[in-house]
Image (cartoon, helix red, strand yellow):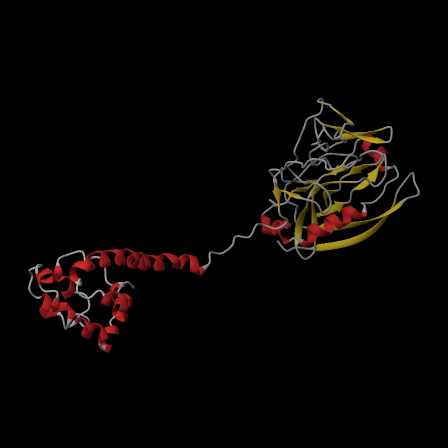
Length: 360
C-alpha cells in the first residue's frame, strides 16, 4: 500500500476559557499498531501524575512508541486527557491530548492504569493535593500517604486497539466527555514535549524496528529510568551483544600443545638419570632438546631414541643398538665421550624446529 502522509496545522479555539492551543493533525493511510501491555513503574515523587504511553508518528520513520511516564501536572487541580488516533475518510488522524479540570474523550482507547477507555479512576484532587488510587496505580504507601482504594473499577494494564473508527474502537463521547471538552485546556508541558522528542530519536522505539513491541514501554520520570514491558529496568536501546574475540576462539589450539610440553617435561627428566647418568651437563646445556618430544619417547625401553629426531641421535645409534638395558649401568663411559659431540654440532640444534612443527 502506498503511504500517503498529510500534515495539517490547525489552530483550535477552545470554548469556555481564554486559553488557546494549537494542535497538529496528522493524517496517514496506515493504522497504528496495537497497544503493548506493560507494567507501570512506581511513582517516584508525591504529586506526580501518570501519563500513559502512546504511538506517535514521524514522517521519516513511521510509528514510534512514547513510553508512559510519571510527571508533574501542568497545573494544580488539572488532569490529563490522553491523545488518540481516529479513522475518518480513509485516513488516520491524531487528536492531541491536553490538561484540564476533568478528563475528556480519548477515543475509548484502553491505555490502562486508570484510563480504561472512558473517564479516569487512577487518582483525584482533594483539597489542592493529589490522591492516588492504589487499587489501580503503583505507589509506595510507606512514602506516599495521600492514597485511597477504589476496588469498584476494573484494573487494566492496557492493550488492544489504539484507534477509534472502522476496524478499531467505536466509542463515542458521553455527556461528561463533552463537558470536559468545553472546559479550559492547557497543552502538553515542556517535559512532555521533551519526552516525546527523546523517544522519536530512539530508533529502537519505532514499530518498523520492534514489530510493535518496544523495549522501553515506560519510565519513572522524564529523563529517568527506562522499564521493559515486564517492569524491569532496561536501556533505551536494545542491549548490545559483544562479539567473541578471535583470541578466545584460538586459545584451545594453543593450550593443547602447551599441555603436551608441560606433561612431557617431567617424564623426560625422571627417566633421564638412568640413561645419561654419566653426563648430567647435557640437560643443563640443552633444555630445549628435551622439551619438545612426545610424552611416549622416554617412557618406554631404550629403543625410544631410534624414532624421534634422526639427526640428533644419529651419532649415538650404535651405542643404543644393543637392546640390553644393562649397558647404561655397566659402561657409563660410552656416553661421556660422544655426548659433547652430539649437542655441540650445529646440525643437532636445528632439530627443535622439527619438534615445534609436530604438534601443529
